[in-house]
Length: 329
Image 1 (cartoon, rainbow, N blue to C red):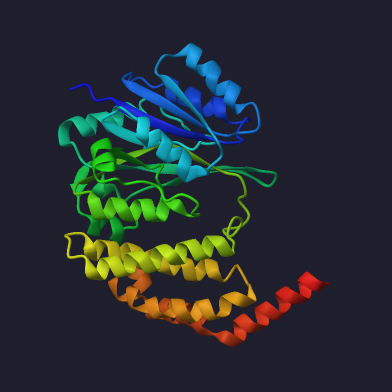
Image 2 (image 1 turned 90 degrees about the horizontal axis):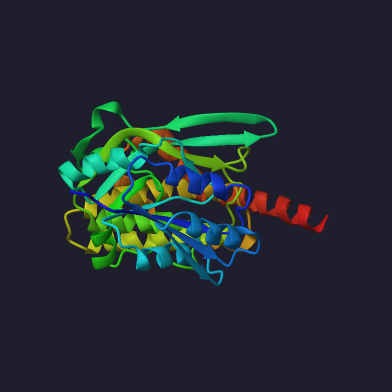
């Protein structure tokens, strides 16, 4: 068996990093792959750089398109991918292991899972921080076909498209795509994988390097649209998990419970007056907590603090007042 791997790289305003990203793919010891560079209307030299690479290696394809966002670029790559499995790399990230694809293919050829999950590293390089943090999985899960419950209990099913190799038939035949014009697009993509995939394998590898542009704040890129988009996904898939009678419905609700907790935490970083009523609306999803499998989410002290954060109107009103004073001042 000689599986072909499609690697999709959305490209937009990453001129300082794109060479490192592409070179880390071309350096792979496993050679049966294609690289799909999707130029999402990048205004810098990235389009030229992408075209230059096509002259260096016939396995590289370039798509030039009008700017449509990350989801649109990834979908354009899926549409033309010809591989048996598909991987995603953001163009400011890279792989630091020349055997990355080979290690995944070795598992694919023996188990043929729908999804392979691998670990990743967060690379911080700022004025006050230069370090790499390894984010991984419990060692006893590695290399085994495991159920979603174990993956979710151990918080292994990370909300990211970039730490997963996915069977292309699953994406194409079940029409699994990224929702366009939506922030936090990986949340819905992963929810679709939970609903449609049947076999999962986790491997003991950490070759994906995720570059952190701003290490100082978890809320650096969180805004009202981001929260609204996440809330829309929560409401959509919470309802779907309760109505659909599929084998992974309970797993989907657990995943939504974890995203709900994240939404509450992130919501405390954004204060806008018109959102007050929305917080009360989101309280209606509190029942999701009952479906959480992670022990820390079930901790009474933790859930009490979350509920207070979600419903304490005086605190939110105070924060709104401060927000508007700063805005006017």
